[in-house]
Amino acid sequence: MQCSSCESFPVKLARAAVEAYVKHGKIISPPEDVPQEFLGQSGVFCTLKINGELRGCIGTIESTTGSISKEIIRNAIAAATEDPRFQTVSKDELARLRYSVDVLMPGEPVQGLDELNPRLYGVIVRKGRRRGLLLPDIEGVDTPYEQVAIAKRKAGIRQNEDVEIERFEVKRYT
Image (cartoon, rainbow, N blue to C red; front, top):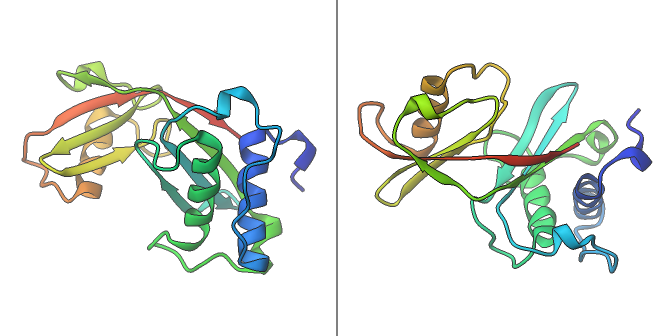
């Protein structure tokens, strides 16, 4: 059983957002007492798992809502209801969901794979208007080559195409 009082603020907010939406169709507002660090703007990814298996993951590279707390609410609901790989989360699943929230730090361009470390950095690949992102420290992604290949695939970029690459760090909350 998850200790809800042990959860970080972003995880509590993500959980509250998903539960209010799945149970009542309601989109919550951030609470009055949002910690200062969640009032700024940043991209945010919300990941849902059940028994260690991915159940949904949706995020934004840059802020689309005006604050990190609003981004958490929006992306948590999207992870539960809009991830095309999964059915919408059901009420029966809510108690078993485990959440993590990644707040993206600003990215920096890199010149090659030798500047990447998939445990430490996430990666963004760009080719024209196509962009693909892969978070850092993903199980089964052990090399920069694998990391970039997956990000290219997500963006619909062929493996042999040259891309601009950025790396970024995240602050991960569980």
